[in-house]
Image 1: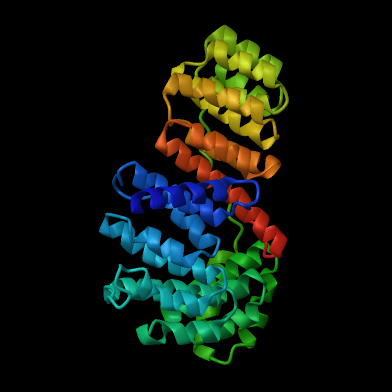
Image 2: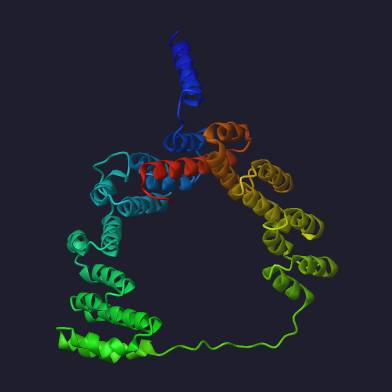
Length: 389
């Protein structure tokens, strides 16, 4: 009786989850992707890395930590600690990023992480703070490691990017000479690109540290001169296939196609993929008639992606099927992911989930679920006004 009740409850849950009254979320879809890995017998090295990345990027930090603990290789688990801290800090949750360094380590939240790993995650958080303009918070974060110069350099690079050269020089005055050199070179490069080389002496006069000012005046001229790249010219008569590729880049596809067919050129997919955007029929004809096996598979998969982006899902599915007939089930996963993503954006997740569950390959189902989750996460952020991916 207990077994019957459990099975009945599980069936009822699935019916509710995918029924008309339930709104499917990206979080549920990503959890299902983890379940796919478990159903497959938990193969090495662990769940698809994209699942973890999306869970973290979408703000499902506890889910991402749970996924990370499923990785079987130590280097993957270590990577996930730093990556989760990085993504959470980039999402603006600095305090949460610091706390989660310990929580993601393993099933015991009190387990001490390797000191080197904690230091690495701490550096990442501090550099993100500095790059976002919070130099005070960054210095506070990095203080236990005593590596203020690297954080100040990240902050100075932000100042240089916004053309605050006086501010960058003030920051450089707080750094050791070696890291200050990097700031000086960065300012010189920026001045050269802005055609403002004449500002160097004026900027040096604003510096309070005269020793640093003298070093700035000594080093920055090395970056101010316009650099003329040395180009090695090799005289070679272009082949007909070279000309065909040039014609394709210029949009002259009729000429390119004729040359490819006449000269049996390789890498046909390169031309066909460009042509598909303006002449899908001609591009497919060119590809099927002239490409070798690998080139044909690649071209068909890229065609499927292009069709999905246009919203032509039926065409994308046809092309994906043709590519997989040639290369086997579970292949062309980039196309699978893109089709699932664009189809979800167009029609919502339910028909796409039905298609996903019909696929016979675990890897393919997983990539489709990732595509669905991408679309749902994007829509959620748009609705909440938190930006786009």
